[in-house]
Length: 243
Image (cartoon, rainbow, N blue to C red):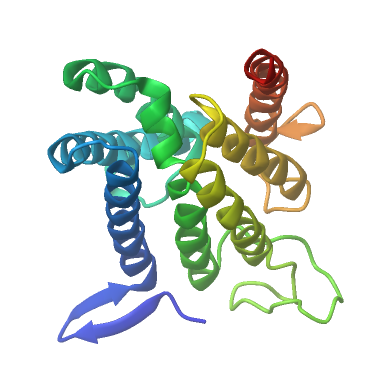
C-alpha cells in the first residue's frame, strides 16, 4: 500500500483525500435519497448537508487536538498543518449543529438523524480504508494469516483498520433497513451509533494506542459512555412505542 494515489506533475494526490471526497459524496447522495424517502425537500437536505459537512470537518479536527492537547498547545501551528480526523468529534459536532439547523428548517431532529444513520457506516468504510493506505491506526504484532506488514512496522501487525471496515459492512444493511422503516424517531440513528460504539470499544484494545487513562484510551471511554446512554434509551423507547 502507498498513501499517494498518483501525481500530476509535482502535485501528489493522496488516497486519503480521494476517500474523504468519496465520503462526502456518498453522504450527500444518501442524505438526498432518504430525505426524499421521508418527504424532506432537496433544498432542506442541501442546507442540512453543507452545515453538517463543515461541522464534521471542524469537529473531527478538534477531536484529534483534544486527544493530543499537550502537543498541540506546544505546537499550535500543527493544528492546521497536520492531518487526522476523529470520528467521535465529527459526530458530536454534527449533532450539536443539527440542533440549530433543524429548527431553522422546521423539521424534526431525530427524523433527520435517522436519515443520516447509513452515512455513519459508509463514512467509516471510506475513512478506515484511507487509514489503511496511509499505514496508520494499525494494531499490535501478530502471526495471523491476514497480518499486514506496513512500511514503518518491523513485523506484520493486525490490520485493525480493515476490521472496522468489515464491521461497518455488516452494520450498513441494518442501517439502511432501520432508516427506511424506523419504528420511532431516533430508531435507526441510536442503533447505528450503539453498534459503532461497541465495535470501537473492543477494537481499541488492539488498535495503535493513544495514552492510557486507567485501563482505557480516551476513545474507549467515549464509546463506553455512548453505550451507557444509548442502551437504556433504546430500551425505554422500545417499550414506549411497543405499547
